[in-house]
Length: 347
Image 1 (cartoon, helix red, strand yellow):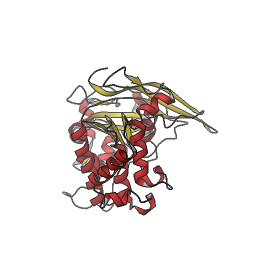
Image 2 (image 1 turned 45 degrees about the horizontal axis):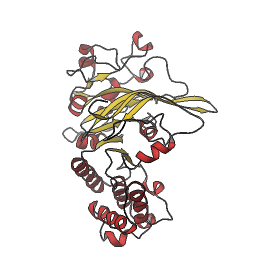
Image 3 (image 1 turned 120 degrees about the horizontal axis):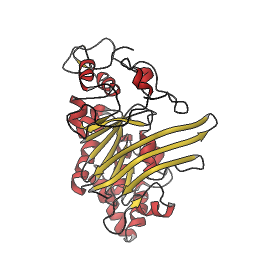
Image 4 (image 1 turned 90 degrees about the horizontal axis):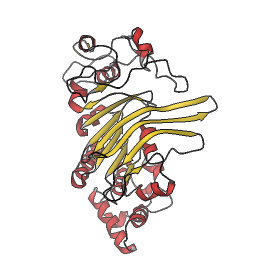
């Protein structure tokens, strides 16, 4: 291993269905370092959640097939390869070394167990603490994430918490064993902007204190701009562009990224009558298009796009700024702005 906490290489996940094989993830590779926030963005169905849930063994089933590697570094002992790890090996690291904040805390918490008891259960599964010590730590965690009257609230059930408070309880549970890798899958979905900002601040504070690496899965580029260090843009199961926050926002190289940036409202510009949208629909992953998966929706497609482009350095200033577009650098700079801002021309 290098200095990375997590190294994912050529991860591929497919599922056998009645309609055929769905290639949900197709050759995804990325690294995660200590204290870093990596945002994975893209439309619904692009493979974001399947990618990160597969790292924790949560997509395993008789109909699933996995390829590639995901190596989790160890503070002591040997590194663990997560994709081929046994269920017992995953149970030892899940919650302790690598934890997850799920998209919907109401369906991710047991509705018939008290919130505090669920946090205590995870603590005692990985740490040698008594019941009383674990309860005290659970209350301390709930108080830390802003739950009022934490000692009393620890005895409440999930349905007695608001959406924002349930999300805070999920964050407390995720950080209960000081994991080195935190996966946050749409942690602010369906929350109002005030609670969203508070939850992001809590994630940032805990990341800085524990020097944990964070993988943030989202489609909200506003959230990404607030918290991310690096970004991986996914489309139809593949990473189509990867780079730092500044590179993706100020020097985007892939047409799909241009379309995402162009669909954001700008407070420094007149309000449009209609938000720009990427034409067409994402492909069905049991029958993806040949070559570049974005080709059917891209107004700049040409003959070379019938072949599958590798994720490589093609036009960005940094050698670590990677993308999957055959257009050369000059063509990208000429085509990526519509009406003076990043966007995608009508197909």
